Length: 151
Image 1 (cartoon, helix red, strand yellow):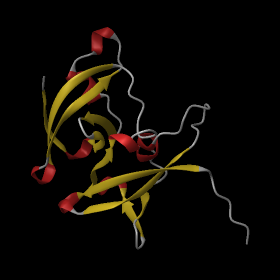
Image 2: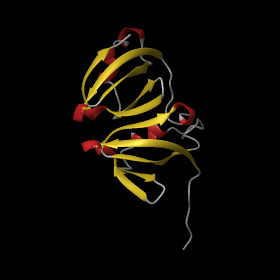
Image 3: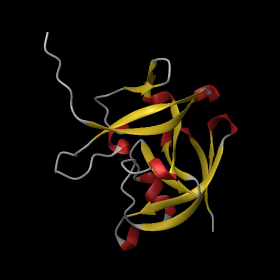
Image 4: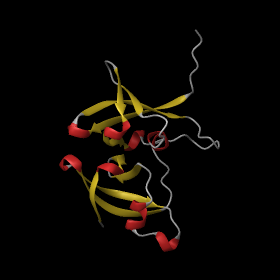
């Protein structure tokens, strides 16, 4: 039987799921998007045709339901291929389910009349990127309890 594989980029990450389980491993993003731009992990997370995400650990491959992922943390040195950080950076403090909190910056790329944090949050795909001093997090918007602007 012939096996076909799409070339993908490896991204080392920590996946945090509902209930606080943390899975350290490698995730994969396409090398190219559909229009020739670099493939991004955030696009794969927002793809409803792939409800499970493979995470390759040192011992095993874990198939994680993307709806149950609270966030994915990627260190700054491995962040290439995580997200496209276009737009104006705005400080944000998030409170997530399970008592988790995250402070960082989102990049708002909306028309000038819609550049409020409220507009940004109301136009999100399921996952969105938050930059922090240590890297980038892909946050599942369904797990955000509250958000406040931060300086």
